[in-house]
Image (cartoon, rainbow, N blue to C red):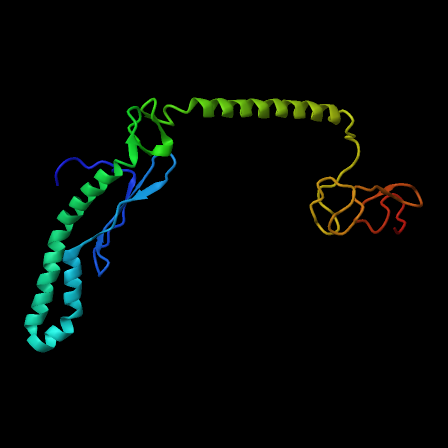
Length: 219
């Protein structure tokens, strides 16, 4: 194989060695956005010829005996011997075609597609981001940061009137539904965080208690 093979880290071998669909194809990917480009499929004629001979093995065996098997074995050997060289040549052609779809960044040496290429700077957009796009993104980040600060300030102001002494239940004791501190359960309608007092002695009675812990009266 002549020359040096590039794209060693961002290509996928789609070649098929066996069967009537034997041939060469490679998929190359952009190192930034990972979009792909596939080289045109090239049929491997050596394997296709061997495949047709294998299909005729039974006929050859009946007509030629051991000679028929020998013909097929020879075809298999010939197809296998030529595969490696044919694949390397197809890979070189695929790389030559792929270079028209990808650009190599002079800074990070990655291969990127046209959408990820800053032609004015001769670098990929990771190394030389688009100025207008970065400015717009920075404006949006500033807007979001300021909005978050204002929302935080509004929340602090609203929090001053939040009654921390009000009991709240995050899980309904009756059906175990998450309530997020609501007054009533969304699963069964149970009144949450209520303080039940004994009718006899006014002692707070837990929801699970059947009798008052203060005087023993039945709830």
